[in-house]
View: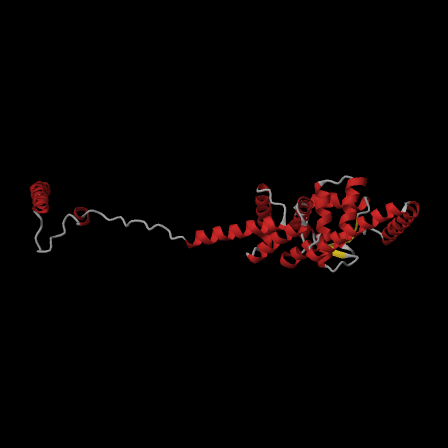
Length: 289
């Protein structure tokens, strides 16, 4: 299966043929993700627990939405009793349609070229040269929508049903090389798969708030952020003053001084306690006699 053509065909289907709910889109992308891990097999199995985890849908939501997708000929599935259900993602693009589109483009270009004058043909050649040079520049950059998804897959696995719509939105808002840089930064910081989407959202949202739209701007922002982090780690933390009790509070009331004698205040307190204790003894003796 040609993944890029399949995604484009699915987007066209949603735009021009049939509106789908968020649950149906999520389940379709989830099945695409599992199919990718299965090596694009025609039929593959997927447990309900796996579908629930990846799509965010409940068991009843999976059953409901897969029935709708099957009726729309987007997927097919077959129950296997107590075993995991078998699924098939229907191919939405056709090689015949792609070939026919190419042939029509060639024919139209030939007819238009015959009808145009020499001056118009010269202008067309110059325009084509400009487009070709631009295409070569893009090829030199080597960053495309597919390469972005490949890099994501190499780090964290094929994008699931939650991540894929986010990636599509980023690629519509920013150039592919900017998104590629954000993924590279996440990989250099050892971001794990469970936190990849949240990390990427923070990076790209920060760039968009700063009106960053080019690769050079993104690289500069990343370098400035790393420098700030480095400076923050290098600064020494202020030391807290050690709190100590005053000298008079550090002595216990009955502890003798260094010469072995109690202070006058402690001695007076001790004498008062002894006197009070002796005064009580006659009362106790009378009570026991």
